[in-house]
Amino acid sequence: MRRVYLKLLGAPVMPRYRDKHVIPVINDAIDRFASRGSAELVRELADEVPSRVMGSLFDLPWRGDALMANIFRWHRDIVACVGMKYTGEQLTRKAKAASDELNQVLLPRVLERRGNRGDDFISWFWSRAEEEYGEVGVEVVLAHTRELALGAGETTANAIANTIYLLLSEPAVRETVTKDQEGALSALVEETLRLDHSSGGSEMPIETCRWPAQ
Image (cartoon, rainbow, N blue to C red; front, side, top):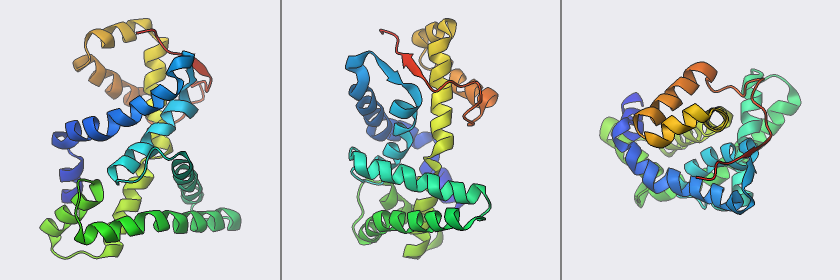
């Protein structure tokens, strides 16, 4: 499926995803705390964005707090089991239950989009996979949809938190990025990933961070 992923996740389609899926999700998250003038960086922003962006891409009701909280919890239960190499009866039981719940959400959408394509990622995946490989089964599309959904988890949230924390805590960085939201912003993202990768980081405080007035 590498060729499919390259076409669906390559640089040429990023502006489309940004405008239709990423920016609305970020604006929605910020609108929830903007009037307060402050926010808890991880819980109220970084943790909120990845799963809701994936929900938007999959044409799920991403503004629904209950559904998004469930998906976030299912992801953590599954990743916890994988991280422990599928050992531990309790972890395995929770991961299997989470997997079943995630299937109940994603499978109806995969089945629907098989014959009724729309402007969403699952529809695009069906179309691209068929172009590359001919007929593909529901199980294949569901498996890859789940794989992509799990990518919108803790590592992505950590990368977002690390980047924004650096932007907020370093005035020179913030000034440079404010003046150049193309090259400097891209450099900020690349350097944060290089220096802090996607770990939470023992030096990354999970505390209230005040947003700059601009």
